[in-house]
Amino acid sequence: MTGLRVRLSDGATHPKDSSELAFRTAGRLGLRAALRACELRLLEPVAEVAVTVPSEAVGGVLGDLAARRGRVAGSTVRSGTALVTATVPVAELFGYADRLRSRSQGRGTFTARPAGFALVP
Figure (cartoon, rainbow, N blue to C red):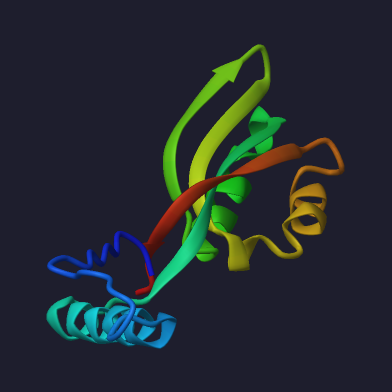
């Protein structure tokens, strides 16, 4: 769950009626009301990926990122080396290092860092 906020208001404590169980119950009822009112969607973690490959391997890398449901943000080419940036679901990155090495004859590298969450298609 992301972006959920439950606020308990209009509550008073006094020795006779207040207890930890009463406040837990109020919190649980507030959470249930919030979940009924919200729009549920399934999210997955995504990573921002930067891939460095020889310029002749860019086509294969772009195709592989697209097959992994990646969204390419951009690419730049400098002196025979290309840098491709994309956002890719973390679940699709497993085994990517081996695939990248085979597509770039062992000369490709990549870095990945968490970039948040995205809707699962």
